[in-house]
Length: 247
Picture 1: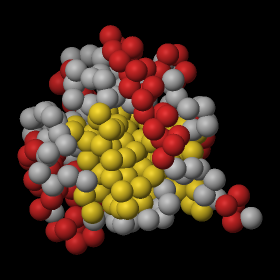
Picture 2: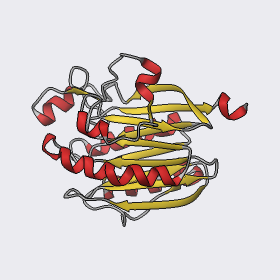
Picture 3: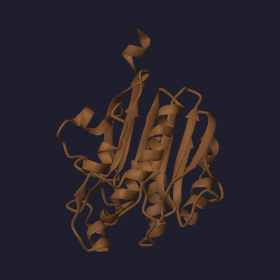
Picture 4: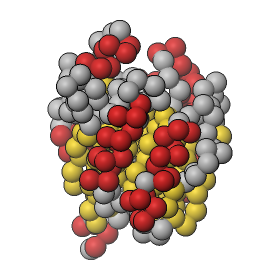
């Protein structure tokens, strides 16, 4: 099973070009599950009308009713049994989106509160999310823009310790920066600061599935002006049936 998570950036900069490239990239990769953050109404309309989406995916929202200024979105080729939107303490319209799939896996996505000043809010959000996920299913993927890096003590302490952080589990000490202005110069131009951090993350707790591969996506410019699909890179994760589940 393949899953892609991606903060697709709500910015207006070259929106149409980036939107077309995003849809083409997702169609080419053809993941079983897609979770996106910072989806605007305008982008949602394009996603809903994309022929490959209409032909093969269930989608968590078709009209933006779960969004504030923007929101999180889930698309799945695996039938969705149950969909939950969980309200959180927030000043930025953040909600957890969780889907129970017919394969027995629950996939949840989040865009936690932004900025370095919001540590306490992120911890409070995780304090609601983690018990909910613990009760939802024994097999859970928790993915999205966490807005905290692996060295953020308070937020990482608030995570359920039974979750495996997929990137280091597969790649060890390779940094896997999802925000990297050494590569994505558009990010530097738009935000006027350098940044190198792994704040987009995929966590897995499961006996039925094990992580087999994890790859950064959107790491190449899409035109000669160093435009990238987003100011974040996405992550594609491949899960395989676990040997423990087969024994």
